[in-house]
View 1: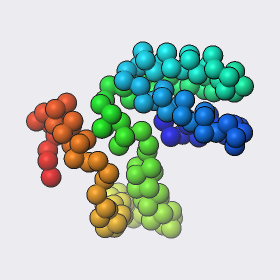
View 2: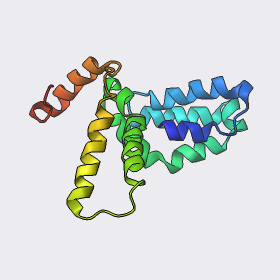
View 3: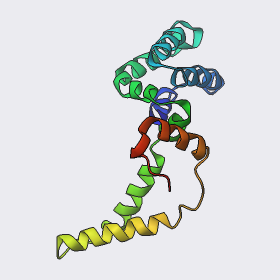
View 4: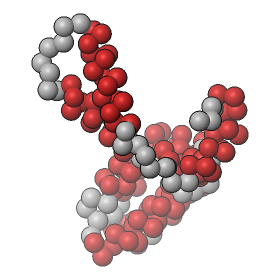
Length: 149
């Protein structure tokens, strides 16, 4: 969602940015996919939607990737609408691997990746915003598959 928002607003004038963002927030903040689709149509018919008609096309092109977001309650959506944490972990692993040109064995790669992940987790001392609300929803949705800890 974050990348879709960035792409949608890449060519939006600064004076229109606030209005466009509030209408787009209504789309991804909708209760279900049908309501989101209706809000997208409402946006397309609005003054800003007509001025920036390419935004509707961007959202429709990615609609199949947007729909699964509505399978989750709002508490979980706030945690998964961005991939920044995954990208940060991948960046820390790449940083360690790219300095080496050869690995003597497969085990050496596994060990290096393990140590990179272990070092990356040292910085994970901040609690995730609204994690308790999301955790309750995970327990409701996934039952015994979700382990508290």
